[in-house]
Amino acid sequence: MQSKASPTKTAGAAAVPVHPAFHAGFQWRDFVVYIFFAAVLVFFAFTIGDKGFLSMANLFNITRTTSMIAVIAVAMTFVIAAGELDLSVGSTAALAALASALAMQAGYGVAGGVVAALASGLLVGAVNGFFVTVVNIPSFLVTLGMMQFVRGLDMRLTYTKPVPISDQTFTGLFGSGSLGPLPSLFVWSLAVAAIGHVVLRYTPFGRQVLATGGNRVAAQYSGVPTKRIKLYCFLISGAAGAVAGMLYSGMMQTARYSFGTGAELAAIAAVILGGTSLFGGKATIIGTFVGALLIGTINNGLIIMGLDVSEQNMVAGALIVLAVAFGRKGAMGGGR
Image (cartoon, rainbow, N blue to C red; front, side, top):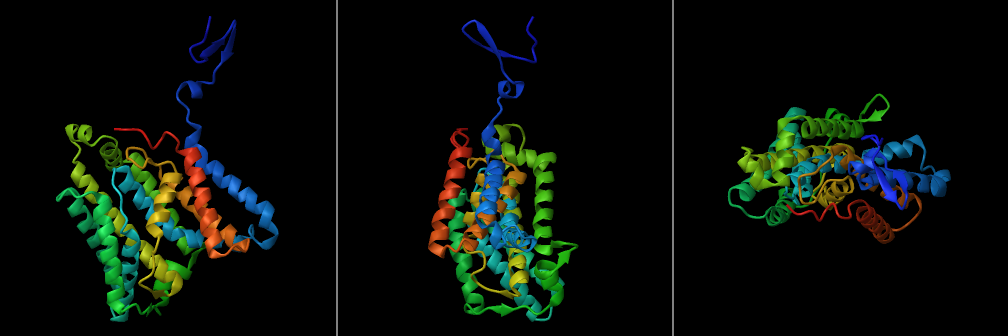
């Protein structure tokens, strides 16, 4: 008598047991980002371990330089899970950095700087959300235009001049400080990822985001306010861009118009590497966080190996494409 917990395949006269996980639709590709991350660590450990790659100082350096991308990528997970895209978040980070620096320079203190940064990020998110949900313009076009507009505004605010930040409280909180052995930058990224994971996985809002991205029409018939959900996702992205901008300026102790250049593309890569579907409806914050660490580890290892910028870009790009190809084959092509 055959057990229901042990399904079998028949090959000729022999019955071959099949593990229940595979019978239930186990997808090994969902774990590719973790496998690839471990493989990259092992590779660099053997090739450049003697050059300090595995030193605690360098590992903390990876977490510091990756933190801004991780924060942006967590918010980007919500946007992509809802079936949209935000290309303006990098320029929003620079706007927030400049807004906070100028507010503190004007004498409003750390609190004023934080409020100015968050207000600028939420404003960009609200504009994106309005044009996507009310005017019904595709998010790719809206955020592409906003990316250019906000970057131009960043340049115009200070005529491309950097704004120094001398407030030690601000730089300690958002950049150079630490919580025990952990750099404050890494603590910020961990906190944002933890909050994002809980919200996406365990709250009604998270379920509504996934429902909106998975099948918008069905979600609407089920009573999900899809337009409002998408607006909230863009607001989250704008707020995350603001936090990333303060982390950039806290780490560099200055604000520059060029902060966040290319950050939106790195964040999207981290999201897709982590297992989120580019077409919405499926997302994982933990995978996104590991994807961001993977990108940061690859960049750090290539620098230690002595590759110049052009070679770093080519190798990092090829590795990301390979990881996505192995991990997301078939996952990104599912129609709705």
